[in-house]
Amino acid sequence: MAAPLLELVRARLDVDGVPVVDGLSLATRGAERMLVLGGARALFEAASGVRDPSHGEVLVRGVAARDAARAGSAAGAPCDPPLPPGWTPRDYVTWSARIAGHRRGDAQALAAQAIAEMKMAAIQGERLASATTQTRRATSIAAALATGAETILLEEPLAGLADDSARHFARIVLRALGRRAWVVFAARLPLESPFAMDADEAAVVLGGRVVGQGAPAELAARDRAYAVRMIGGADEFARLASERGARVSGAGPERTVDLGESLAVSDLLRAAREAQATILELRPLSHAFA
Image (cartoon, rainbow, N blue to C red; front, side, top):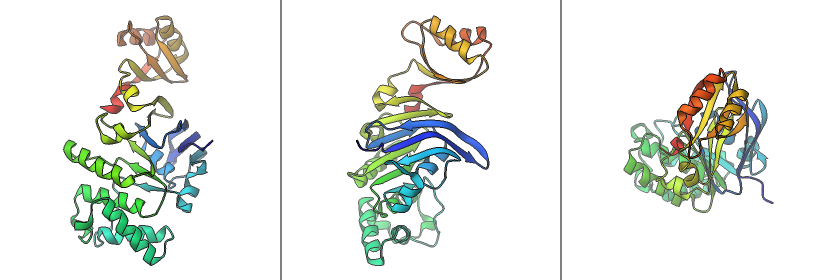
């Protein structure tokens, strides 16, 4: 059986010594095209091999993410990396292929192919100092493609783009990705986005826990399911909410609560009040696709 495209095992990720993700476990279920929604930026950084977990594991195809990046089997495309202003897209994409270990001639060929796939031929010689947001985003993705990696990890590829531009750009990226496996990391993504429509699977992450995982359309339809984060009384809250007819999963201060057909949010608030639990966050799972 093939290793999961992406797997985190009790992973803790620190930023400046402070944990932003702690104890997160996640494994794709046969997906080759995956969305990870709602997680911290550190998740993308860990999956693309630039941030090591301080505890646990982050694996791509069963290999530690940093090792997968070094071996050239996976490559990340950060949302807005610092690009040398005096360089052109062609310079940057060729450099990416070179540092991935390809010889000069091969790197130039890989760069030319990636630039063509991303529909950048007409602008490949322009200076990055004057590049638009979409051109900079396309340059980052082309740089990942030019490594020759079989798995591409993308951070917020549509951030900052107007709706029509975002849909057009997403279609370009998906055609460029072709048969490669991919994972998109984003805070949220509209269900009508080409990425959401093409994805096999999505995971919604809140804090250090997966609060929903499955087909994007199925998760988007769960408008009566909520991710709840609270202080104090979590077990009593879960008991009281379950007695009222809610389906409660998870452990500790973060729970997923499905209200079903008969309950309302006010029932959850009353359960929290009776349990002396303070709700810090109450987020519909469907909002990841808003």
